[in-house]
Amino acid sequence: LAEVRNAAMLPLHELRDNDGEVFDSVVFMNDILPCVDDLLELIWQSRRQNAGITCAADYMYHDDIGAPVFYDNWVARDINGTALENAPFEQIFHHTESNHR
Image (tube, rainbow, N blue to C red; front, side):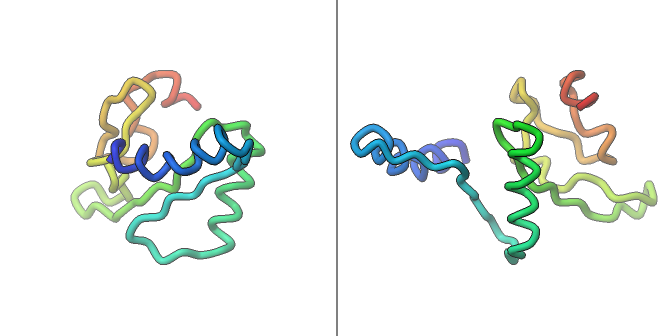
């Protein structure tokens, strides 16, 4: 997926390099139904927290543990590139600093 993302970003890099056009935010969407309010909240929170990258998180209810668990662990990675866990939110990160944040 990183290669697909990088290919999608290439025209934006070319606009920056050739025309000086700079974008403040880029939003990638997958198989979700977009909600304008949620997209604006995502962008606002990203700027408010001075984040380098921000993403929504998908959860599903896990009957065995009786709690919602992180769903998109097949593509999500921490800052070290380690896959996130299919677990409750406070247990998905392997990177200690990310887990505390």
